[in-house]
Image (cartoon, rainbow, N blue to C red):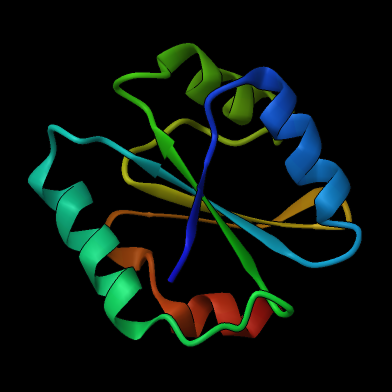
Length: 110
């Protein structure tokens, strides 16, 4: 699994644009939270999406809290951690957090 880092507001614009070609996943991760670590590990262990089907983006919300807030605002979701958003054609089609994060759930929306 290859994570593409999100560090700038322009990166959100790039994800939205890219999502018109291929769906994109944003994983909002708290590096200080054991539940977030577990959710990330479970996602990575079960990840079987080729990059032509889904691209993965990683947001360290401790280092980039304002960017995390911008993601929540842009996609009209409540901020949670850990959290995934699947972006397809510029819209958030899946928002899941904590132990609801799963590849099965992602596959349902793709």
